[in-house]
Picture 1 (cartoon, helix red, strand yellow):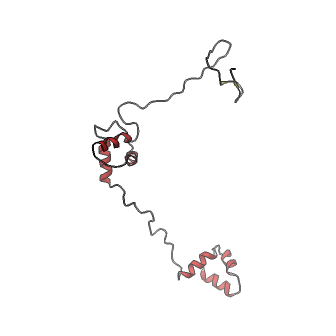
Picture 2 (picture 1 turned 120 degrees about the vertical axis):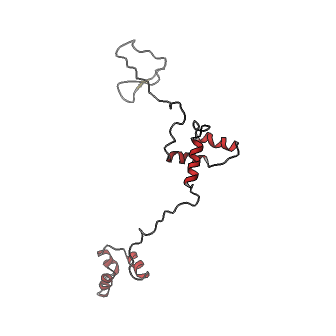
Picture 3 (picture 1 turned 180 degrees about the vertical axis):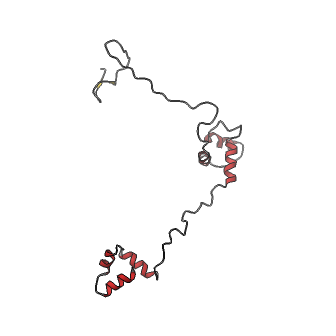
Length: 153
């Protein structure tokens, strides 16, 4: 490709127009020329995402899971476990690390024997005639027109 652009330039064409025809930017051509012969794409050869040096080892992660699943702490959340360990003079990991390790192990759901609280909306009440529904507060009593309310004065 560089040969074609060089040949076009020797025949009198402008470099930018030759690059435009071949759909290559002038800056790419310049970079190719200054680095010597054209090299193959090297993006797949190097893994640019290196592991952090302070990443927990599997043994450390297992220790966190063992502590969180122990009889003493199995019903507590990490924001309760870490301070209790600190009171005992132990520092295993930060609270966020406990949360992250438990989340990766799918153990971050409700901890303990009790069921998590359920949220159920009350069923709406509907009056089809007079004196069927009484309420002490009709501040925003809905009407048949959306966005308009009966307002008590």
